[in-house]
Length: 129
Image (cartoon, rainbow, N blue to C red; front, top):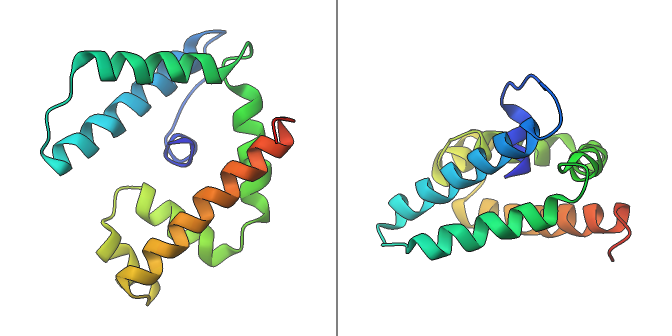
């Protein structure tokens, strides 16, 4: 979600604004995934995810998470950053794999490993690991 948020234009307009915007992005990504999977989701599930996001964004509206993610992304090789930005920018996994000259399965594994590595890196930077 943060990769998508970092690629979208945003003008910070004061405390609280960033959190609302990030929740909106997260909710839209979640709903798009639900539509893609064609399954029904209870409102309670959306609310629970929204509450989890609010809890995890911390006292600084997620600023520390965004800074940690930016620092972690700088360490990622360019090819991997291209995979992240292409896929999370809206291209399908198959389209992203083709653009990068990879098989779909190879891209799936790469994205899984990148998400894990970025999560671990952010957690370490935030002192939660």
